[in-house]
Amino acid sequence: MTPLRRFAVPLIALAAVTAARGQAPQASVVIAEAELRKLPNTATLVGTVEPFTRSVVGSEIPGIVESMPVREGDLVQSGTRIIMLNSDTIRWQLAEAIASHKAAQARLIQTEFEVKRIDALYDQSQANEKEVYDTRAEFDVARFEVEMQKARMNRLQTDLRKTEITAPFTGYVVQRLTEVGQWIDRGGDVVEMIDLASVLVRVHVPESAIGYVKTDDPCSVYVDALKRTFEGRVWRIIRQADADARTFPVEVIVKNTKQSLAAGMFARATLISGPNAEVVAVPKDAIVERDGIRYVATVFPGEHGKMGMLTPVTTGADVQDWIAVTSGNVQPGTQVVIRGNERMFPFPAPVNIVDALGTPVESTSARGSERPGPGR
Image 1 (cartoon, rainbow, N blue to C red):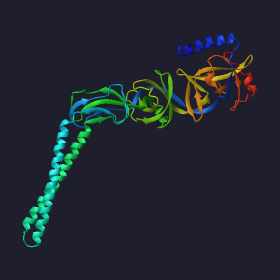
Image 2 (image 1 turned 30 degrees about the vertical axis):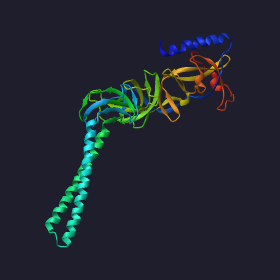
Image 3 (image 1 turned 135 degrees about the vertical axis):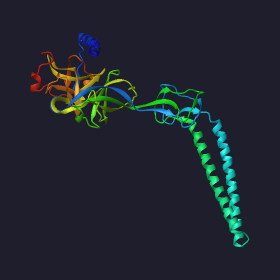
């Protein structure tokens, strides 16, 4: 059974029960008319959802894994600890470096005093030039020793901080590449992470259409697994064709605010693929999406007044407030519902046409009253 049939059968049954009780609902709707407009040609291309960022996090220092609080599938925030290395050896080395730094500072104070003493004696002709040179050289050596011990101390303090490895960005852990108790070399892999705050859908655009694809162009992405359409835009155009297929990789970026999209999902992206052409278009507000199917609610005359019904459609490019209907089942001049369509069904039901303020208006135009409904 198709998604449309699965959706329609219980609603038709509900309509039959409602009609039997004499309580046919009447929805108040605001309408507009489908128009012929010049919009770009589009093409729907298959692709795969990919993470915006994928990273194999590594360790900057060697060591033994002491703890690893994250598991595969965990969502971790940027800066969250994902692994802790044993730091005992570094702590002892740091304590030694701190002591050596203090000793070097004491030696520097001593040589500085000696330089002042020898300089005073030299001024009194009680010390020779060699003694002055030697004491100043000892002072320079002591000064450089202080700097060297300070650098060693700073390096060990940095290494101590690096024993805690944190997430470089907010994302999901998809693979643990080490375990507690395991030795990691410098640069060793720890975990693999992916960022799904936004995702990329990579599609392959034919050579004949690549000239019409532009960065930042809006496009729609339908994901089969979720039966839902997402709004995206062209992110990157890789201008190196596949030698066999003569297609160009294009990446579409889609915001994944609710984290419903996952890496590896099958997707269909609809992109601009050709020049402008005259097509039937409806206001964007006329589109209703249910279970991955897009509908337009059309209005037509019935025996006792205006009737409305959701009609499944396929759509193309959208420009400003209008979107192309490419399925061919909506004609120019057709009255379509732009407000109140969320309460309509894929079978005829009475409607009450109102204006934007909710005031009832003329239910039919001369042209609209002569237009037959579906199936006539």
